[in-house]
Amino acid sequence: MKITIYASTTYDVIIKRSILDELDKHIDCTKETVIITDNLIPKEYVSKVSSYFNAPLVIELPSGENTKSFEHYINLMTKLVNKNVTRAVQIIALGGGVIGDLSGFVASTFMRGVDFIQIPTTLLAQIDSSVGGKVAINHLRKNIIGSFYQPKKVIIDPDTLKTLEDRQFNNGVAEMIKYGLIYDKNLFRRILNEEIKSNIEEYIYRCIEIKRDIVVEDERDYGRRHILNFGHTVGHAVEVLSDYGYLHGEAISIGMVSVINDERIKKEVIKVLRKYSLPTHSNFNIEDIIDKVKNDKKAINDKIKIVLLDDIGKGRIKEISISELKQYIRM
Image (cartoon, rainbow, N blue to C red; front, side, top):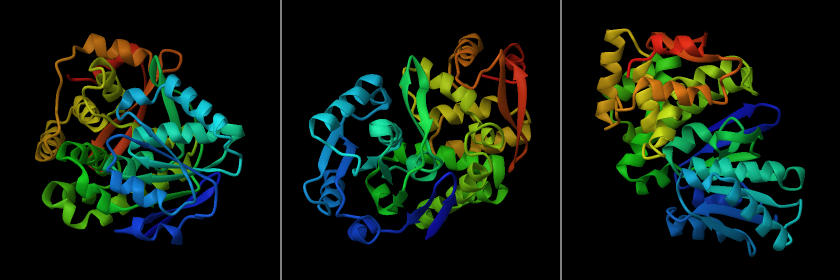
């Protein structure tokens, strides 16, 4: 399966089982290469990918959201300079969303920009963060330092999901549910009623297809792309308040439920979230949530755009004042 993304640069997303066994058919393996990964990525993936290149520089980082930091960014930059890496390099992100975001930001700023390839190994990264060109690090707030920088290619091997713990797999399903809720009622129904692992390539493809359609329309996130933030306004606050004890998808699950006021829709959403062992509420109080939202990068002039549901498959963007937010949240 292949999807072409037509953005500021055009690139392909290739989805194929065991594609890591034929990587040389899809990537220029003669180029100078840096592979950035983390300590939880199975060593077999790191060895397999690095074996295609002549003496690649492999950098392993600690796993977790705290790795998306200025400290790790500077350390990576220092290592690239000390290793005499040139502008001809391609940087490969091998891992989940944290590795993709950090590696992409490094690629976008090292020597004013070098080639960047995503090989996402988690479901969340495969269906969401590896596509669309948002790269960033955290500094006091989530994703506050970053840029828009499209990869040269995205290589997705669904077989890498076999080594994911259930919690990490379900973390990605939360974003899949989000796509169904804002855009595709049939996708939502299938996630609710089917066993998605048996045909995961098709689900990955559909999610990327939806994201492509939205991103191509609004690459730099000024309008329509805000629809992808369903659940994220509250979800990001929950992540920060929990000191990232909640995984991203878990926090977004809580955020989605919190802004659904229609009891019929909420009942169905809670049902599908529970199917995948995802949380539906937290014990954080609404005042603390709103305090964090005030510092969200999406908040401008005391206003913020939130995403509401008119129905399953029909998301809507609404701009409100921060002071009105309490009317829309049920924690």
